[in-house]
Image (cartoon, rainbow, N blue to C red; front, side, top):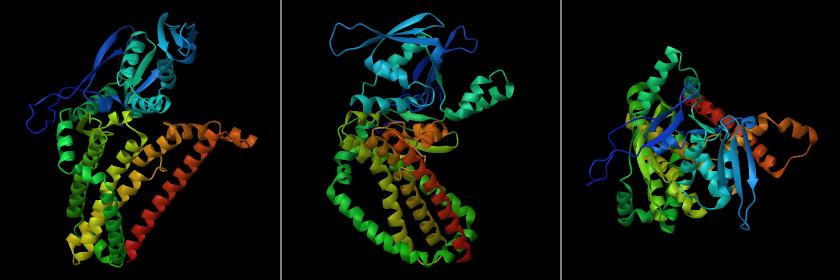
Length: 421
């Protein structure tokens, strides 16, 4: 899921205002002969950069003799600059991940799944060493940013990049909210992670499903009311959904502190340059158990399920009119959001997808399955033989493709049903 400068950060109640954390990267300049310092305002943006190592013919890796049993050391050479770096086994693993196709965040997940723990300084330190040795470049996650960066001599490209840069400056973040989340957890937030909360969710879902069936019979009247007040309905739906995104992130943060980990940062960002959204950096959960990561991933989407079920129950109790139509439409939007967040087979790297990644132990499942289908799938099909990992790729890609087609078809059917109701 960005670079840029100072902004007024969020502060916890009672805390003094503080600027958000910033990262400074040493990046090779456009002329290829010097370096420039580039500042990134938030770790959320930093984690989306893609490290790109030199082409394979421009570097060399050799293992060094080791006098300590069970340890391995390597030397990495840049053939272009004649620079040498010594790497340990973990750094060598990280180097192998830096192919320019995956983000810092994906690399960190791969590291955790390989070694079972995570040193938050390991990757930044290695990045700095590789940049200084001219063995690495950092590419933006966005393909548009990548294209603009390669065409900076074009005035139009520079103007567009400046505009994107200005949008990204809207990132507002703070590292001072963890204490507040811990207090909310002590004041009752822990109840969300008890068996009683699970039972309550099941009961609510049962009543909500019943109300949803009743509302289906009034689909025509609801659609008509929305159509007569389209602008008001759209504004109300967007505002309500925007607020629920903040609640989604709040519950993620509470799940993080529930398992004794620290919320590193919370903030507001314009995601993909279009969608304004909140975020909570809960990467400290990598230091917790798999159960903690799964509960955290499920906790956020459950917010949409609860709000959706409450919405359909409320809408079913209301009489026909604009209020009922808005509440019902908002509830359906929440239920769709729950499904999108929780369902892993959709090519979207949402909460459910991360649970699947953790379950199969393949941190780049989406990217690698797409690469497999574009690359070696036909060769493997001709041989009639697939490795276990390739079977997982094929299953994920096929299920995701069928799911996207079914989702589009279902929404088309709902629209047609509403028109004819």
